[in-house]
Image: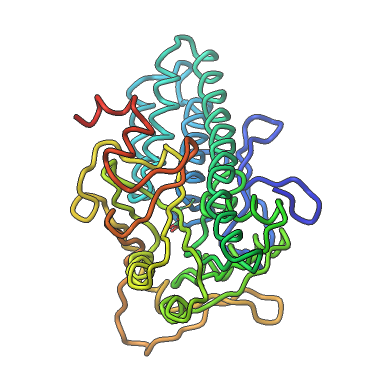
Length: 371
Ligand code: MRU
């Protein structure tokens, strides 16, 4: 996407073919810093500490991690055992986004399909690059499909502003290009549809206030940052026409894991008869899980992310304690919205209802896997 006239992605391989470059998302919007990742350890750290975050981006980063593992093999040949162990370490960096396992396994099987050290390195690089390219294209298609929903509302409102609400950051920073939840927004804006986006701040790490607001602002899209608890009030007062979120893992039955607080937005949307859509590429479907609430692993993170808030003070990024020194905190990073509260999914193949039948009709090649 363009930022101040420059084409930017949140991840790319440097010309030296040895360094994975990323935007350090911990520091946005106040500082724009590009970080270099040169080893599997660097990749794991960047995922765990959330230099990179968001399901499709975590998947692509893990994929590049496998490439770095082949490049940095301690032996002249690339031992299968070594590579599998590095992949297991990569896959356990964060538990909820299924894209990580998907991306790592995809590159691993590309490596296993060839023999010879340089061939394996080459296969890993090409597959990682392909994953990034494919995810960018999938997000573009999500935008193409999703914009029809916004167009319908705009038509119904006779061109009046369409008010959208989103949670967390499911924008291009979380993907490769366009984003998932934001892709239809960018497409609508680019087609001249009058839109305005309510951006949930998304405590504790404020991905909405820091990242989504930054992204939308850079594209010129009108938006307003709101507290996480404001959505229900806005919906009751008809100030939201549609909710669009991303997801970190969605079961083939339609249960949606996404940033903590998403479930409450879905409840409020249902109570107020407001469409609640989830945008995702197929890499975010988990074709093995039936019951999201029982089976999707929910990450718990450092309680200090709740106890402290990060901000900018006189040019310096600082952490400020907001709880009593001795109060414990709990940091559940995701929740699961059951399929019954989801109006539909916007995928690269089109839009479908949140039901096993409709999801599998869109992805028929997955049917044998889940029967
Ligand atoms: O903890 P994060 O910032 O990685 O969580 C990200 C989200 O919950 C996003 O909404 C989700 O990954 C969808 S991103 C396209």
